[in-house]
Length: 67
Image 1: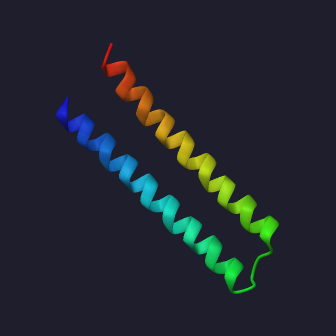
Image 2: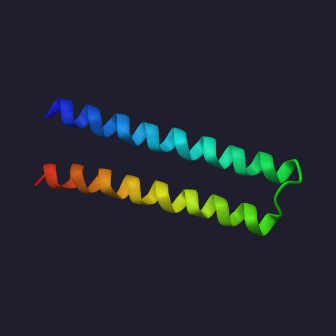
């Protein structure tokens, strides 16, 4: 059970790190004038959606283990 938890923690940490890198990249593109605010917000929200889906899956695993 600990190995699964460690794996879930690693997957979540990877998802968060990927999210932060992607948001930083989108913001950098905006700051450099490569993207307008609407496009930047759309890109960031797509990354938020992906992170939510990943964390939701991780929380479902944790919740099902506590029953």
